[in-house]
Image (cartoon, rainbow, N blue to C red; front, side, top):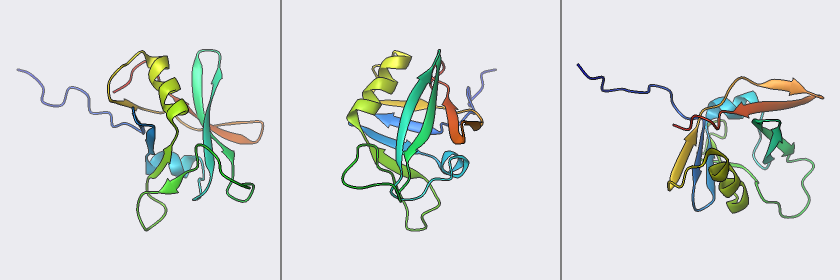
Amino acid sequence: MTSILNNSRRPDITVNISGRIDITSRIVKLLNMQAGDVVDVCQHGVEYFLYVRRTSQEIVGRHEGLCFPTSRGGRGSYRTWSVRLAKALRDVCGKEDYIVRFPCGEAQVIDEKIYVPIIVRNPL
């Protein structure tokens, strides 16, 4: 017998070659994101973390990585556009596909900031 669902894990972050990055509602809730927040990815050793770099109240001017909700409700999934961030995530996992999907771990609080680890070794 062969399984229909080889991998039942659903992605938390979807990265397109065009720079579009989709973030699921689970990650939005873990990071306490609001519309207008700026996200970034940082590296600590071999791990990569997604975090809110600037909140919408701190924003002045235009920023790369500015997030906005994909639906009218506002607490669903979020989307941002950043070619540099998308290219960096695709280069880390070594995939050259048009779309790369990543699962994420549980949130960690370090220095009063919330970080969510991105599992880059096993993209979905």
